[in-house]
Amino acid sequence: MREIKAGGGDRAHRFAMWQTILNAPFFRSLELAVLDEDGAHALVFPCKRAVDGWKHAITGHFVDVEPTHWRYWGDEDEEA
Image (cartoon, rainbow, N blue to C red; front, side, top):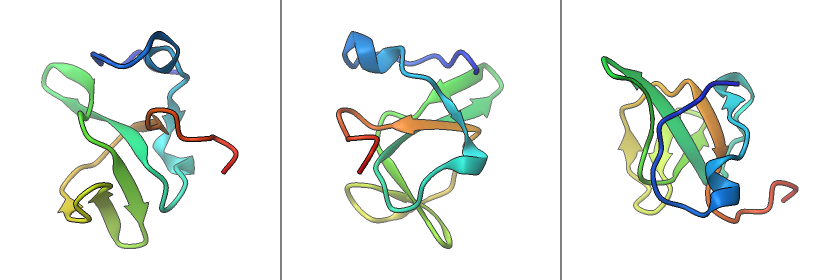
């Protein structure tokens, strides 16, 4: 998968495999990667995929992003 620039987090999480956005689960806290003029970057806050777009996982507000990749946020159980 893609190498995405991201800081912080524990070692295991920093090296977790990024998944294509096409298979992102709904209503789960996710770390999203977006592309800009400097390349791919991870967002610094968790988001949740909703039927009508992406929401900030903490505030519930919609965020105007077009992510390319995702992985589970923090320690969230991948099997939940």
